[in-house]
Length: 200
Figure 1 (cartoon, rainbow, N blue to C red):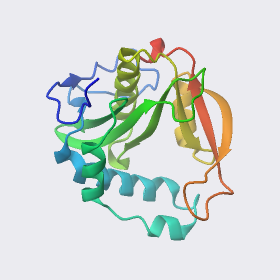
Figure 2: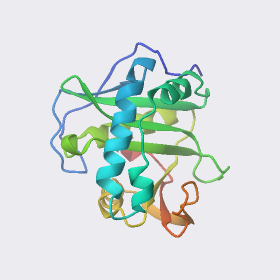
Figure 3: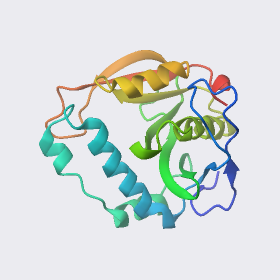
Figure 4: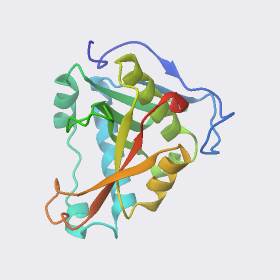
C-alpha cells in the first residue's frame, strides 16, 4: 500500500456519542494523513508533550535534552515504509496531535499491528483527539489486514495507562525502556487488543 504521506484524503472524526473515554468531541476534530508540511507541528507536539508528561518520571537530562528537529521528521515522513502510517489530528484547524504506527516491530504472532507513538498537546487533551487518532489507527491497520494491536506506555504514566484501559486495552507484557540513555531502569507496559473492532 502506498504511504499516506502527501495523500489528499480527509478523515473526519465522529461525534462524541458513545466515546468510551467520556470526552467531549466536536465536529472541529479531524484526523488526516500527515504530510511533509506537518513536520514542524509534529516535532513541536512531540517535545511539548514529552516535557509535560515525563518531567519527574524520566531523568531531567533526557527531558532537557529534547530538541525539535523538523528536517529529520520531514525525512522520516518522506521515507516512511509502505507498512507504516502517520496521522495528525486537527482541533479547529490546528494540528494538535499525531499518531505513528504500522506492523508490530518484534514479529509478535498475536498482536500484529502497533501504534508506535501517539501524542496530543496538553492544552488539547480531553477533547477527543486521542480517541480519534486511536480509531483511525485501528481502521488503517484493519485495512491492511491487521486486526490486533499493541501500544507501549511508560509504567509510571498513569494517565496514559488509564486512557488505554478505558478503551479496552489489556496489559499483556513489560520491557525495559532501552532506547533512551539513562532510562533502562524504567519499564514500559504493552497494552494489547486482540480484536480492534471495538476501537473502529
